[in-house]
Length: 80
Image 1 (cartoon, rainbow, N blue to C red):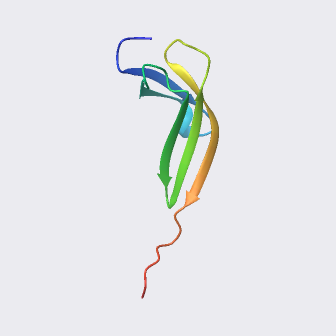
Image 2: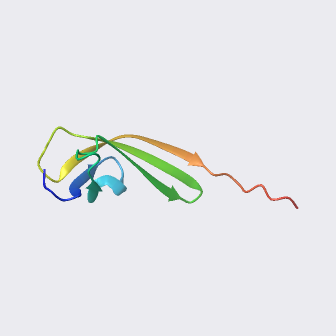
């Protein structure tokens, strides 16, 4: 572990957003983050993707895709 406030990680998963994408993450209480949750908005859906850290300790630290949740915002409730 380096003495900077951030570390390099790489996301692996079944979708293009995590096809070996390298990101920079902050340490939490001086430790690597065990679980990473990312949100993306596509059309009217908010998609939450969860990744878990692997056992490797050399940077970039790999995170593997675990699950995806999608919530449709639906149509706006606007009175006529």
